[in-house]
Picture (cartoon, rainbow, N blue to C red):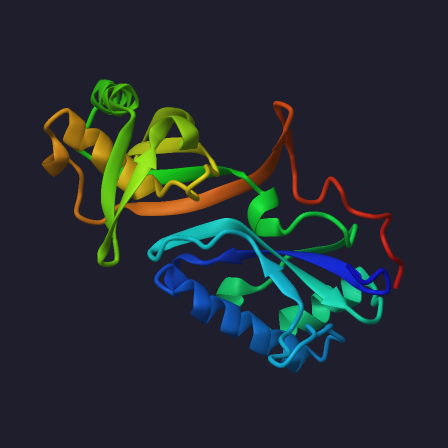
Length: 239
């Protein structure tokens, strides 16, 4: 890693109206916003020179988020507040960053380092907590499940990705809070997980056709402790 580069970490949402924006489209949109903001970003070496930027693991299409991050490598150190304000002015509202802090340039890539996620899934009405608990217990006992990812079938190791869950009853129906861990084969998709769980107990039809899902937090798991993305930030750079 070039020691002369400055690694500025941004936190941003992916608003519900952009839930169906694919990851490549999201990356392209943010890249254009950075260019319009005039931030002094670094570029990679080699024939295909690209902006030096790292994103967290891609969200499944149809999933929104309150807690997405990207690290932008700069050739010039700007004030954190100034950089945030400049980028906020050029970014669509539903992706507008809300925090920016410098972090150590030598940290691991975000996609691998943020290995723990918290999710919220709206399960709708007509279900009870016991059914949800029974379905998840049955899937954990089964150990694996498969689902179609595009045209390919993917097998998921439940023990490698599932951490815990809780079920709450709200006005609009049951809400599932799900904690997952990034496993050897990648992130576990929350909707695929809960649909496989209900299939285990023979009630796949009990879930609505569309499940609203949101990522609410991301962390790094360090020897049993959860580290937040900005806990490793450098002392604030004054404008």
